[in-house]
Length: 150
Image (cartoon, rainbow, N blue to C red; front, top):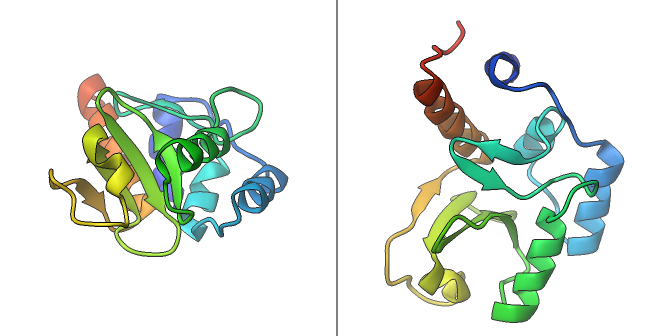
């Protein structure tokens, strides 16, 4: 985790989310956030990373992951185990809080089918939130021509 923090710090200031806010998200969404997500949220609270605008983890800025998750639960019947991380054009990035792969990037046309049936377009997937976050850091470093730290 120290390596991720160093790499992130080279690109952005550390802006974490408090343990109380993370507990509130878990309570509001009736889920348990993965440990790696909570560790990363201690220094990353959402925003632009890897060319993707992520919803705020903290409840200080809108839109938030909790608010967007509740909205999509109501609008498209998003299963309870998913948390909405970002909504890039024509797609949706969610975190599965109860299984693997942990992060799934689906086409918008498949979003309402998550967890219900096979998706028409194969999604991009990461086994853990840490893997997803690291892939975004790789993308950001490549874009800025900054090398990873050893």
